[in-house]
Image (tube, rainbow, N blue to C red; front, side, top):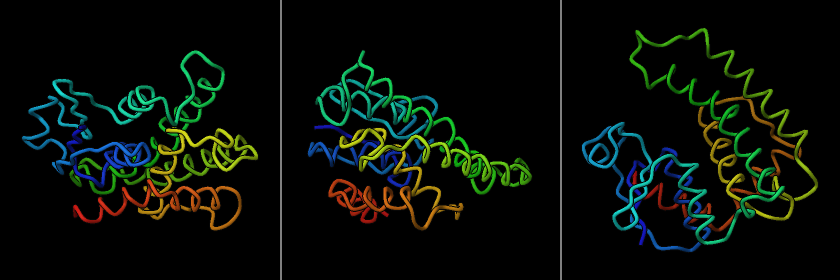
Length: 201
């Protein structure tokens, strides 16, 4: 049994989504970032945290990589070219797409008002748009970024797409990326995760 500690409407959604795809049982403790419950597990108070027995893991990408590797699903084997390509999509998502979204979030509602830099918001929107353009160029003929195989890279990107919609970023309403986003949200694993996120509000 896995335990996820973290408020669901955070990057904890990624871990929940993967565990739903894996059909692995887990317990959810919806603790906010920097809360006492989270700081008892990790000093920086970041979520999500995965607890497995006596082990405590942090950082959503690392957690999802561990779970996919452990269960041998939704990832390509380490040391293969396909894994390197998959990791390239994941890294592009984290560096470019998530980077723009996280900076926007911090300067919109996370930081105290006196620490926000409103002028950076337009730059973030432009960076996100360029990131989408790059993703569109790299997208192949398959239903997912790695072709026919759904991987954790799709989970990271799908989470960022939803985040972007919440922030009212410009997002394609039709075309390959729009179809891809719809395809991700139609997966049973995504729907099961979303139902639990909504129930935990």
